[in-house]
Length: 56
Image (cartoon, one colour):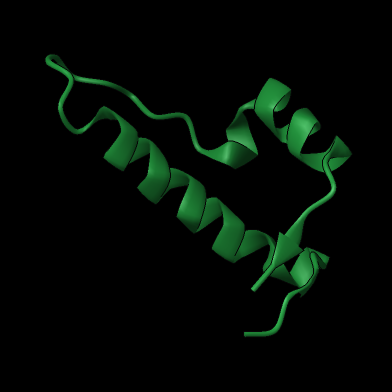
């Protein structure tokens, strides 16, 4: 497995993984949830941009 630094071209896949993870996180909760995509959540997106990210 190759581990490398994140590049901007990885962003669409990161967004997809983010949505999938949120669905998994909430799957056993009762009620309906509106999951805000990473691109539309300013606070989470800012935190992501400040993070050191690696991909594999």
